[in-house]
Amino acid sequence: MKKVSRFLISKRIFILFLIGLGIYLLIHFYDVSLWYILIFGVLTGVIFGKVFCRWMCPVGFMMELMMGGNKQFAAMYQYHKLGCPIAWISGWLNKWSLFKIKIDKDTCIKCGKCDKACYISSLEPKKYSLYRGDNATSSGISYSCSKCLKCVAACPNGSLKYKI
Ligand code: SF4
Ligand code: SF4
Image (cartoon, protein in one colour):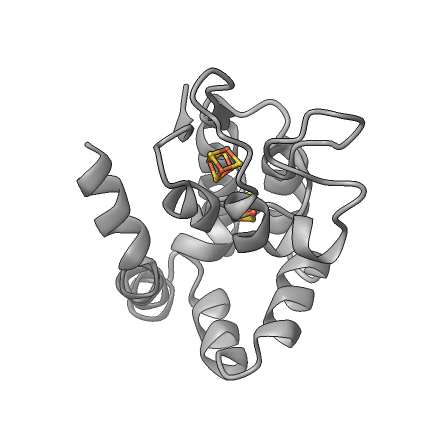
């Protein structure tokens, strides 16, 4: 299971390309209403949190391509993304979604690799952390977490999982 999830996370851009292309073709050739896409995005938000932006959105794919060369700019874009109602609603749903990024505190060795991999805790280390558990909020439930799952992939001993 660990291998499957790591493989999927490593292929996220390709998955985003495939699903994004499928959604674009549905809109372009079958006149699927943007309202249906919005409803779909919100439903995925209820189950998975803000996954639409980084795993399914055609615009998100284009934005990632355009900013791929500049990691800091890409991080700021992901962090402050404000342009899309799916991002607004599903980001807000991160706190209540069925699937969440969860930590096993018994196996966590507090190495901090998860925080280093995450653009949220990297940009605001005092406010957000995935493991510290002091006054910091978990990055995974913040509005800006768009489920790239880099934190999960970065954890050396599988203490972070994205699950129900
Ligand atoms: S999935 Fe993990 S690494 Fe990605 S934004 Fe959310 S908390 Fe940060
Ligand atoms: S990467 Fe894993 S082991 Fe290291 S601090 Fe984060 S959750 Fe703990």
